Image 1: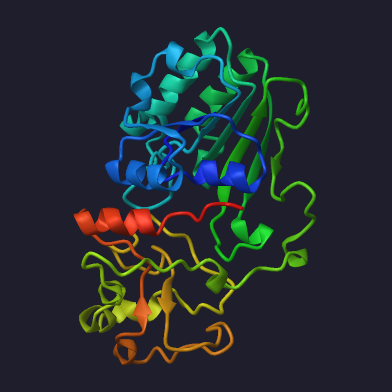
Image 2: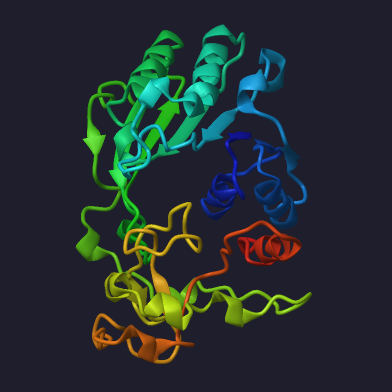
Amino acid sequence: VIEFFSGIGGMRVSLALAGVPVEKVTAYDTSPLCNTTYRYNFPDCDVRSKLVEQLVAADVEGVDLWTMSPPCQPHTATKAANQLDSSDSRSAGLKHLISLLKALTSPPKWIFLENVKGFHGSDMQNALLAALKERSYSWQQFLVSPVQVGVPNNRKRFYLLCERSERFRGDEATLFNEFPDRSSEAEVKVECLNKYIIEPPMEDGLQTEEFYLSSSLLAKPWARGLSVVSPSDRITFCFTGSYGKVFHKSSGSLLYTAGAAALADEPLDRSDMTAYVGAIRSVPAPAAPSSAEHLRATRCGFPQPP
C-alpha cells in the first residue's frame, strides 16, 4: 500500500478497522508533525518526508493499493480558498500522480481517494477519471458522512473507489449518497461522543487548562454561535485546519465539560457565554508548533485497532 498525502494516518487506520490485510505500507507527507504522529501510531510503516510531485515511477510501481487525500483547498467552499481547482499550486501533487498513473508498467489494482464535496465535478477530478479510463479502471463515487455509519461527526466528503477491472462498470456516472449495505441514516445508531474522546497524558508541561476558552474569547459576540457539545451528544461538526487557531461556528465543535447531559436535550443558556469559563474546551490543537505540540500529537493519535 502507498498512502499519498498521508497526514497522521487516517487511511492506515481505516484499512485496519476494515480488516484489510496489509503487508507493507509506505506513506508520503511533508509535515514533520503529521509524520511524527504517524510513526508513533504505526512504527511498522515506512513514513517518508517527500513531496508527492518529486516521486518517480520506480517509487510507486507494482503496489496493490494507492490511497490518497489530496489537498482540499483548491476545491473547498470556504471564503479564503478561492476554489482555483487545477490552477491552484496545491493541485500539483495530484497532477503528478495522474501523470505517473498513465506511465506505469504495473499500475495499482485499487485506488481510493477522499476529498471535499467540491472535488466532484472539478477539472482535477475529470483529469483523474480520464486517466483511470485510459488505464482500464472502473469506479464508484460516494458523497457520504460519518454519521451514516454511527460516528458522531457531520463531515460530508467525496470518495472515489477504483478497481482495475470491470467490477464497477456502469456505475461510473452515479454519485451514491449511501454506503453499501446501508439503506438510510435513520437505521444507524449514532454513538455518543464520549466513546471517541482520548485524553492525553499530562506530562512534560502539557496542561489540560490550555485547551479551555478564555473569558476574553467567550465574551465576544460571536461566541454565542459556537458549536458546543457535551460528551453525551451524538453529533459534532467538521473539524477544519483552523481548529484551535480560529474560533468560528464552522471551524469545529467545542467540548462542554461541566455537565453530563446532552446539550441537544438541555441546551446552554447562551445569553452570557462567560458563565462557562473553565467549562468549554477544544480538543488538543494549539496555534503554534512547539515541542509540546509534538507531544500532544503523538499522545492524542489513533488508538491501535484490535
